[in-house]
Image (tube, rainbow, N blue to C red; front, side, top):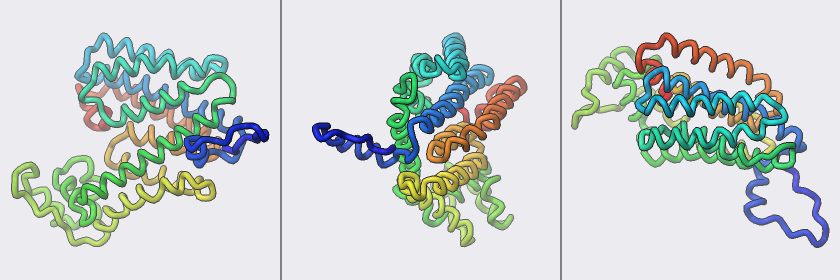
Length: 309
């Protein structure tokens, strides 16, 4: 975001304004308005579809009020495609999201909060292009902070240095096993899966394969480094592409569809507007397939398979 020209008597930018401007665009407000338009359409469509999936797959919340919130979110998603009313769409969606928080708390997942924060920031943008650069800056900082925090958590846990956490997940035989067990010999996988994971003394969850340990460490290192590349304009596009590839590889491999779609769409804010515009039809197609799958998934299978709850 290029700083506006100031007269001799205009006040200097505050510290908050200077920090926000670090994530600003070199282009004009028209480009940022285009970025917001695409993100608004996807995020609100995602919220509506996610709510329908919750409803159809039997999420443990009151069905009537969940259905009411899904209807409001569907209306908001439709308004996001109406050029004259699109700025109202996130504001209409916020009460529905607040209701979902009341229904799901304290079981509300972290991915839902990321969606709600994004909608809240989108709601700050009024009609036209005036507010777009500032809202884009705020959304970019939200994305960079979340990415950095995920790496900081892994660093603090200390269970990624020797691959302990990933070995434990492979041993459980759940969604992470399919993603990482191809790196390990079959005998090593069998050893890890022979342990009772929640019994004291189970283990050791240590493996000797250098590639496996290197992948484990590469995850938290990338999550700590990439946010800085996103904020710096010269490396922003490349960092956005690498971060999106990393998130999609990990989250889709781990079958966390909701976070993969949502966070990838936020990362596209750092890329040229055309990237998100071209990706939107594919994203909407995935949402349509999710709706179709909801009709055929038995019970909570869809919620559990793609970790949408």
